[in-house]
Length: 220
Image (cartoon, rainbow, N blue to C red):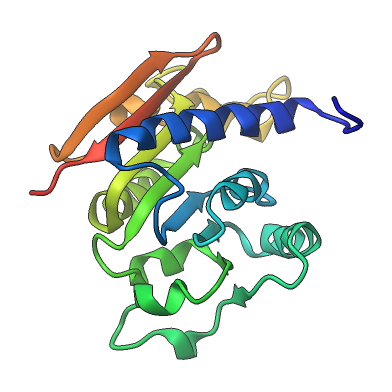
């Protein structure tokens, strides 16, 4: 397309970006002002790359496993030469928290999952998760639900499997992979423990088994 190679993942990120921009029209627009954007499990940072183009003043934070962050570091550095990237240092935690005013001094921030708990409450303007919450253990889902509820100020965008394939653990057999077993037993997004302070802007089923949601945080 116009001399560029596009793959399925590129088109998916473009779709997610469009949906987020549409949802943000209800709260003043995505490109208005500084924003703290957090993508939980965002892999190499493909979606954050799109969102950064639409708001250059935003700080885009990727929450991922350490080995994936190395790939994201390379990808985002090549995509935005000269950008200011924070590779986490514990010295930045002040009085037990990662202050928003400090994070807004960076273009990108790369953090491991345990560090999201240090964000100030109601400091994240946009929290995102696509196609991974429904593949986590109950323990990790509950952890992220608590983080989404407490750390998000404005919007939560989610595209995730609606329900588990089965409520009963099926023993692994030689015909199954470990991923198949985890996928079957992980809770879907319908069991994600969001509190009552969320208002749906958009909810719809996809053509697969996923549910797409844009939820606005209502001040309690």
